[in-house]
Length: 165
Image 1 (spheres, rainbow, N blue to C red):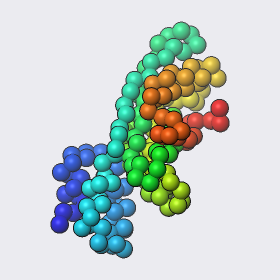
Image 2: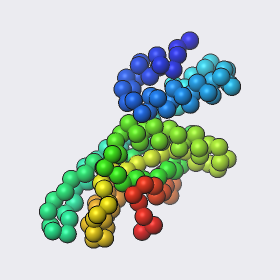
Image 3: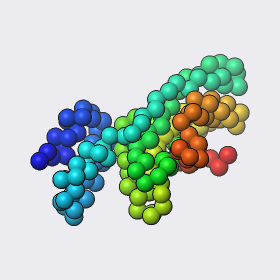
């Protein structure tokens, strides 16, 4: 029987944040439910169903082009449509979002509602930006993400750096 570490190495997950979270969470779960190894649940839930990486090109209020990286990790939809937050922070990266999407999948499963898990965001820092710059960035971000979200596919929610607007 493969260990969690062997599975992560086999699938070439070299993302530290994701690996640490997965090993910790699954060791706890497998200690309680060892029969899950037989069903290969670990391998089935480790790989996100879809990872979307995109460039967010936008003009700031000075009409200068800015470029940010945008992501959406649609981790698992076994229980229902994807649901999870979007965060805007300069430290956003794919490894962290994979870990958070995995965790969101588990959290959503505990609610009893038919929701899968996802997480997304961009390396955009809204701090110190004008309202107009934030609006321009958000519009460009959603234009790129739009084909992959919707009420029957994926419902994004707010997270760090995303206000109520």
